[in-house]
Length: 96
Image 1 (tube, helix red, strand yellow):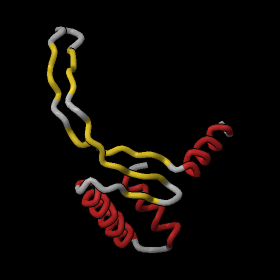
Image 2 (cartoon, helix red, strand yellow; image 1 turned 60 degrees about the vertical axis):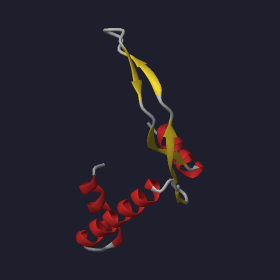
Image 3 (tube, one colour; image 1 turned 120 degrees about the horizontal axis):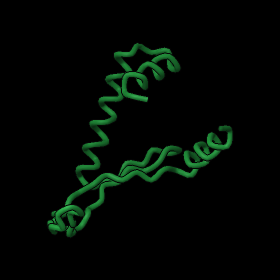
């Protein structure tokens, strides 16, 4: 599902205009990005937790040339799904 499909589905299920749904999703993404950039986590109950984590520097090896390269430390976003989301996905796999 892409962004346009999500907006269409939410507009249909909530009986709201697509423009309002689009603005809401944009504001949500902006607020989440702001919190994650501060190093805070974003907990969406029943869905999961988005967290900002620091990855330490590491050495990478190009398999073709065998040249070693130092990759600098960086911040990454990780997602931990809630148990209810995991269960829902697990149940959907049983019906295939």
